[in-house]
Structures are given as structure tokens and as C-alpha cells.
Image (cartoon, rainbow, N blue to C red; front, side, top):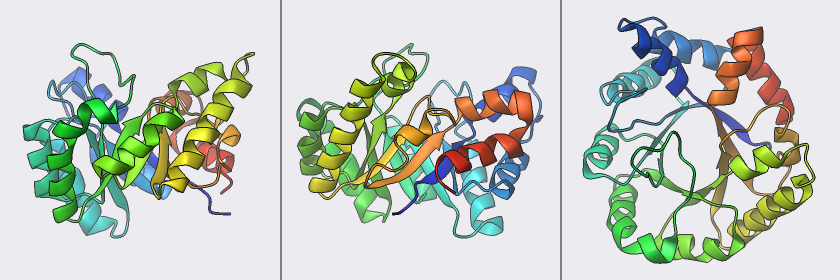
Length: 245
């Protein structure tokens, strides 16, 4: 069975850097450390308010990976906004994960509604495809939404795992785990690649790590929180172990 790859979201390293107004921690140093510790890929999620990853960071990260880590995939998460999509098309990461954004939100907390959002998404997906960039779309764990994501033209979906993670260890764990598995099965049935992300950690990852079709997980916040206790290298090795590596 294929083991899911680990893409580390380095936004929180950038957030810490930004809070001091200098270049510590250096973002490229953090990326090098994550990859040396075994991470398979790097994720950045630029927002227009630049509260963590700045728009200017994206080309720097992309060039660093091309030059020093060939073969390592860069995943750029962003909203479907012309300025951000132009940046993605210019830098040509391996994958662009489109995420709906509500102004003022603390973090991404919901997926696309494909029937409602298809008209806005379709031109962007066509542009990504023409540029050779794999597309992924953030989606709630709801099997009924999967067909619409395939119809609008996504290559993959990234299942929003917030509710699954929060239910872990509670009476709702089985229900949320089944919801994830059912949505994943529907994605496989429609020929969509499958990613997952949000509040995943080494405790709850084993509950989904062997779900058929799961290709990649993106983890940022939980990784850096655990790194405060055990260091970046150990925190990443724990995630890899939880994924079966």
C-alpha cells in the first residue's frame, strides 16, 4: 500500500520571523531543516495580508527548492484571487491548492461548494492545467461534494480534517473517521487524487494513514507546536512514523 507523503507547511516559521521584524528564523534554513529531517515536500500558504508567508517569499522558496532540492515538490495554497494566481503561474510550483477564504478568518475552516463556486474556479483551473501545475481543492469531508469537484476540473482534492482531528479521542471519532474514509472512497471512484490537511498530528494521523488513495498530508501548526517540545527534526520524524515511514 502506498504511504502518504508529508508536506510541511512552513507558514508558522515565517510568522515567528515576521513578529520580530528581522530574518530570524530564516525561512530557507527552516526548509532545509525540514527536508533534512525527512519531509517529502514543502507547503506555503500566502495570504494577501501577508501575516505569515509574504508574497515575496514565494519566488525565493521556489528558486531555493529548484536549485538545492530538485525533485522536492512545492505546494502553494492560496485563495482564488488574480494577484495570487498570477504569482502561482509565474513560479510554477508542482501543485496549487485552492482554498476558499472568508475575510477575517483565523485559519482556513471550510471547503469549496463546487456547484456554487464552479464559475469562478473553472478559468483558474484551466490556467493551472495549461501551465502544467497540478490543482487541488480544499473540500469538507462530504461524499456528495466530490463529483462536483471532478466536474469543475480539479486534479486532486484536499480533505479538510479539522472536524476529524477535533473528534479524535472523543465519542465522535468513529463518525468523523468514517466520513473521511467515505469521502476518500468517492474521490478514488471519480479519479481524483487525494490529499488531507488541518490539525493533523502524530496522534491522529494513524487513523487515516492507510485510507486507500491518500497521497499527501500537509501539516504546519501541529509540527511547530510539537517542535517547541522536541525540536523540528524529532517532530517531523514522529509524523513520518505515524504515516508508516
